[in-house]
Length: 441
Image (cartoon, rainbow, N blue to C red; front, side, top):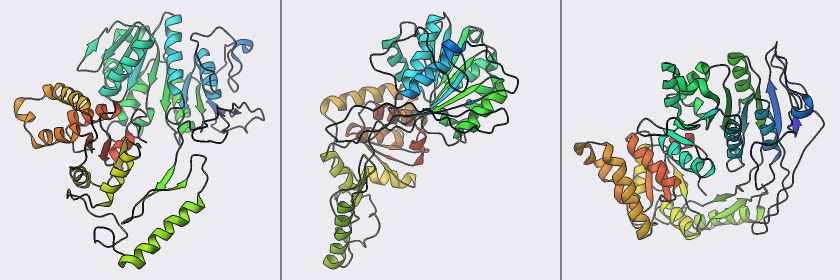
């Protein structure tokens, strides 16, 4: 573990020499190389702050450790970043945990909740979407007994020790001066990177600013480029330390494939160990040469090579159609296809009319979720083309996601994707703001 501390002036001290590392289990199926699991720790501290914690049990601000009795035990050995995060929580200090998808940030949130139960306090867990709040509520119910939900549409067990809610609900409680907040010790902000959203980012900013200073915060996010600046801002606003714990360990292997426009086949050019596959790259180059000599630089559908053919037909000749079909045949689903416009998203989705990825049982589940979701609309709105055209796509495991969709349809698509009922999603950049639960292969 590389230790870094941030002085009151914001300048960093040089990393200490001590390094803590773990070696993960070997994945024989994928033959991954041994990866060192390490983490970087920083802390922003107010200029007049003196830590009251006993160094024997809690370590120091710049090197937090915890040698006391754990509030929660795990069936697995905690990674270095999880151990440091737990130590920060036991110091009763705010922490930003930044790690890749599936690295284990949820374990840190669960520990904060377990601490609240141990200390007979309450905790609020916020997420950016109603669908995600519903999902997190179900997950926490399996782990803890006293869990409630508040999304605006639904309120369940509002007096519970753990309250799952959207960030907008938390801001509303702060505006009203809700009495619930007097009993809250921790607020967990899941997907804190939503602060970068132009339209909704102010919700997170105001919620953080208006929180009482005695409430400590846990921030969960994928990699954040300005994590240090964020911690310094928290330090200034709340006059309390804010730790940053970051790991670049990627438990889900990342592979880079290339599909030649107008050609066929997928070429693995960078493997899960970040090794460049020169042999495959040369094969890819040769495929372009064959196209030039074989058909005068024309693609398989007769259009000029060099760009993806426009969709919109059901002939199955477009490159996008070929890629999606090939991905499904190789069991690489779910897949997200990014486009630069709403119209292009919809055209790509409609061109998949020959493909059907859902089983009869999955179609039935889609129908049930869809019908429940549109109950909030009046009769006239349910007959809108945007509503009626979406169901046949969803039944086949295909969906569209962009900012022009009705909010209820957008959340429906997000929920179905998370539940594995949407196998091919055609989206604009709006999907990049969605959280880690929105995972594709």
